[in-house]
Amino acid sequence: MVLDEIVISKAIIERFTEKLLQSTDVDVAVVGGGPSGLVAAYYLASSGKKVALFERKLSLGGGMWGGGMMFNEIVIQDEAKEILDLFGVRTREYSEGYYTADAIEAVTTICSQTVRAGATIFNCMSVEDVMIREGRVTGLVINWSPVEMAGLHVDPLTIAAKNVIDTTGHATEVLKVIERKADMQLATPSGKLMGERSMWADKAERLTIENTRQICPGVYVAGMSANAAFGGPRMGPIFGGMLLSGRKVAELIIASS
Ligand code: 48F
Image (cartoon, rainbow, N blue to C red):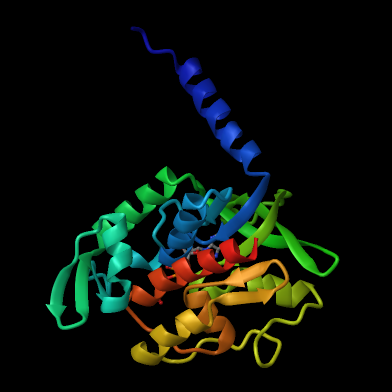
């Protein structure tokens, strides 16, 4: 068989366009492909929801690849082990209640299972704004990350979403846009973004789960973004809270629809 570059090009353009067109109206749009966003997308897609996930970087996995200070092992606690077991990520007990996993195995396996569960992942795409109708966030405004990085004056495109999840980590990017551009109160004690506090793993891991919730009409917050929104501390390279938060936000959305 003689390979034809034009067939290759057409195959990519048509197949990608199919995915993009199917994602112009989704049940859930996840912003950020770190551990919490991926896990949320997995559970939602597994339950039959139409899910699109947008990740600014070329690679998925957010802060999980680097373990702690680029030592590419992650730690999870007892409560989250069943989630890694479900994905098929191997864990090793380190001491009672603490498990380690290879960060590369964890990211690649979670990612693969999420796509196979039916979530559509768009990498290299950034969410730069939201769409709001009658006091509710009803969609996302997206653009290619290289456009954003180069500062090019290129207008974005828009997709509709019944629910949006901000899993952008420390940056809380979706919520920052909402705070800056909309007269919307967030469900925090101050009604505003409260900002992340210094490291306290135990408290942060518990708060990550508690702070995982709907934060304004149409928008949920999960993962590190939830703690940054509600003034919780950071937790460093323990990832159980991220996995449990991703599962919790999926359960909340499934229960509400
Ligand atoms: O930071 P990140 O891994 O978020 P997470 O799921 O997990 C946090 C942990 O990795 C770690 C921690 C716990 O130990 O504190 O930091 O809460 O992943 C967030 C992802 O969102 C992407 C970003 O590139 C990263 O991969 N992201 C951020 N803003 C945008 C975005 C945006 N506007 N559009 C698309 N992607």
